[in-house]
Length: 66
Image 1 (cartoon, rainbow, N blue to C red):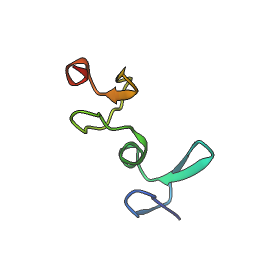
Image 2 (cartoon, rainbow, N blue to C red):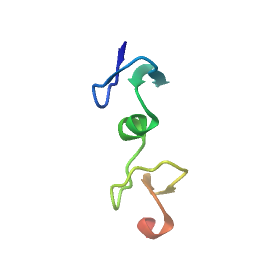
Image 3 (spheres, rainbow, N blue to C red):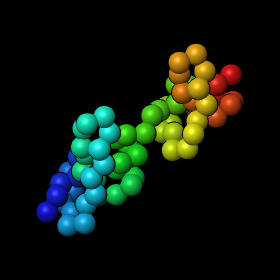
Image 4 (cartoon, helix red, strand yellow):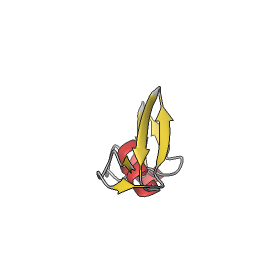
């Protein structure tokens, strides 16, 4: 069984995701988001969609970007 890189759970149906030549193992999309999704530069929430970029930073929404 594979072990999740985020929570340490052993899971027989784990998934692997490769980013920049590093491969991670996850037991759920939730764990993948916590490990891989960027955080908003203002409020710190994980950005699951496109987000907004300003001056080299990423924000979850237009409100946080201002």
